[in-house]
Length: 115
Image (cartoon, rainbow, N blue to C red; front, side, top):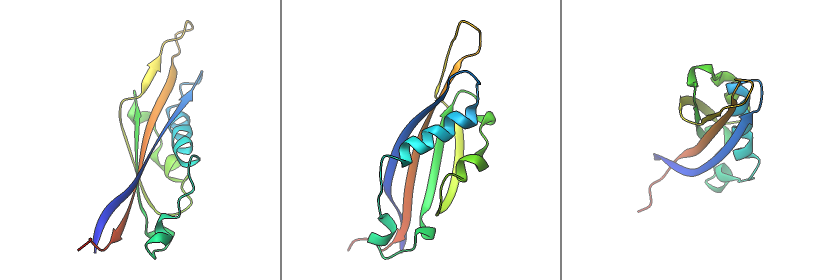
């Protein structure tokens, strides 16, 4: 058996006025998830709890993202959240930027390699 990435989803979220990096990341993760309903684990005869889910969050201030809040969005699987520098802070006249987060979610399973 070998761990194989089988799916990648992308999402975008924002915090318009509160500069809440975790909320922007949460909205981005939900944006990616709410676009699909894929029964990936079942296709391989696996339980959903066996899915290895990697969430990469890109924001201008990665240290401001609460990874536990993002991980709690996922109802099953083994979730790892990694915040990195990216995303976008859009200046506003009041000096408080709009925060935009980008998320990439990868799902992997331990499956047999094709012969």
